[in-house]
Amino acid sequence: MRIASLLPAATEWICAFGGADALVARSHECDYPESIQDVPVVTEATYESRDDSAAIDAAVQEQLQDGLSLYEVDLKQLRALDPDLVVTQDQCEVCAVSLPELEKALGDWAQEGMEIVSMRPQTLKEVLDEALRLARHMDRLEAGMEVISNLETGLRVLRNQIGVDRSTNPQSLPSVVCIEWLDPLMAAGHWMPDVVEMAGGRALLGAEGEPTRPVSWGDVREADPDFLVLAPCGFTVEETRRDLHYLTEREGWADLSAVQNQQVALLNGSAYFNRPGPRLYRAIEILASVLHLDAFRPEPAVAEWERQWFHQTERSPAQRARS
Picture 1 (cartoon, one colour):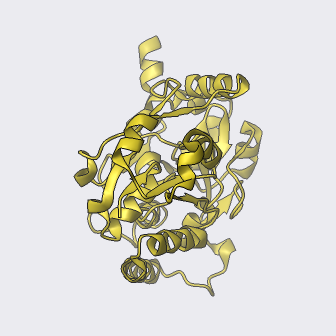
Picture 2 (cartoon, one colour):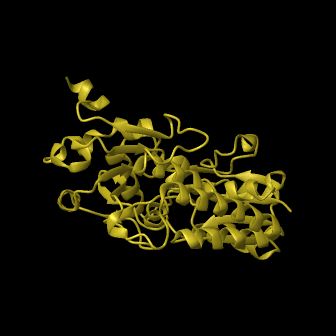
Picture 3 (cartoon, one colour):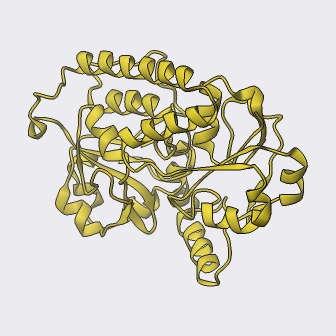
């Protein structure tokens, strides 16, 4: 089998299921595991994706308003690589090449024996269901079931360590607001409320299976969560820290309970939380280490590139530059 993966999460599942040798093409965002770095890249973004939160949003909205695609597929190279399975998504037109765009670009070629698998998980359970569906298309269902069984076993161990199970009263758990974009402000939806629950928390402003949605700063202040988790889509911890001024300069920031109690966490959204692949289980571990610091210490230990804390006295790089 020859596989072209245009979705980072799918690439990670493919490799976890033992299919790395079958990968003949990947998207420009497929950056994990390291072993795939030599696989040819067949997509690129058509907007500037290295700016800050507000600039990226403006660029994306301009492209969409003009009816332009956010991604370009190198069809000539893709044809030359001759995949018989192409994996994409039809969940978010901003996150990766979408199914309608891919079908339009491929045209009649898509009818010549090549199979397209499009992934669209909305909840943590659907992440696993979609992963197993991909494993079936790869003829690796048994391997897929073993991988997911091992991940679920690790999750049960984690929940035992933090003392949380299905009988736990949700109201006894720490409340959490997960921010998926800083400007405009967006609260994380889809599988993130499930991730919060599995990590021993209670998600506010986001509902299981519902899309990530814009929220007002007033919504955040009214929710006043125990923990504020910042994991912007596609951002590393350092990129999030760079854009902290979009929050810290808002009225009432210092009055939030999470800020006063030093419970604002900056997490690697790009590697973990925004990507519905096997590393979502590492995301749960990292978040559990935030919410239950005294009860749970992941192995391997959480690194600075995975999680950092915001301290009330610090200033963002943007604020320091203006002083």
